[in-house]
Image: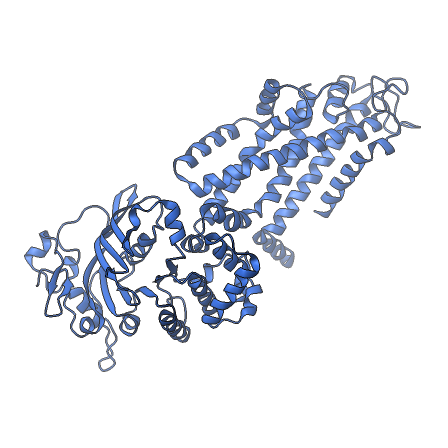
Length: 271
Length: 316
């Protein structure tokens, strides 16, 4: 998990410091197109003669911003309706579960493409398109967890003491289900990196001129044999970021899910 | 003067996929101010459901009919918000399993603060803590426990804290649903003594729900014996224990170990399934004194004997 956190932090730092550490302007032609890696161009240049390294450094900004906005958005929407649906139950619950399940049934990228195509380009729009994909994940996990916490004797006791429903949900139920949030958050973040790259690769979402890993791959992949580096490095970074976020998620899951941890100790002891 | 609490023809049924389950049938009870009514019966006879029905704390699939009159006010028609405010303020409830009745993620202090502010948002944190200390002293819990989490406390201590939470607004009625079942005998005695002294201090009536006849004999002024959702017999404690009239009550009172012969009597059979409609007396299958009429005619409650005790049996 610490490796994951370190890598994610390093990429965030890289994105924030982009203006200072990128050797060249990402959007200008600085050398002959498709210069091989080496010399001042550590990762070579792409088919427009732009420095690949600089584009990767700058290009970290967009995925990170989109992941942050999208996962936050889906949390902000998915959590409250999950709480409500799980706690109130009944007809409202059945309707919400049906809606969420039908969203969930779509392949994520396909759904994001549809939403992105409808609402148009822009970082905020694409974030929303991705958020829609992940709302059901929050909803389902939170709703099921709430439905079980709701049965806890202390919830009934709080009601018997005259606690209003809203307070019971906010003060008693929410803290007891909050443990599942960080795990979904990081797992969703990892997944949304891929969805974002997929969207930009397909040319949906971002206005031109913004460096982005997925977009760079789509620009250069047809020239893979002549200049593999222009496709390989952005792809590598997508892979690294996704893997790192997955590590974080798995690590959090181990910490927040003591049963799994016990198993781990056991297998260590047996070995 | 009217009774503190009166249920009139209170019935509760649960909707299930197999059909309605009639957990409580046409129960009419009275609790006077400052007194204790013991509600006894086997597991599953509907006694806990009755307690929760008074507070309208039942799951969604419950259908309640009849009325609950508290202090002259019909609770069954009370809006949800007023009902909510009444819980914990006028009628409070403690439960069987104190180990799980406190939120594990919340310090004891916060339980008090939340409860007080739910009813009176004008109280600030310091004021709430002051009030918490006062009721904690009444249940003999040192106030340094306020900073602890529930898992740091024993079962007896947690039950005292639950009681303290109930006392905050000096309710007129405390519903105690098997308050000592999960505790050992010594703690049971302590908690009961505590409840008794608090009852007097706070002039509180108690609805004591239990399967423990000894507890009722010692603690209750009135006893209602519940069987399969109905009240089989109800009356003042001493005469009822001295001379039980309903065959079920007689069986229950005999189900105590006899040290001379070292035998334990038990009422034969098990309680009936409450699913669907039933005719006749619910105790028919297990009754030693059953008659033909019991099979087909439901026994209405009648007043029996010179103490005019309520008994639901065709024998009288």
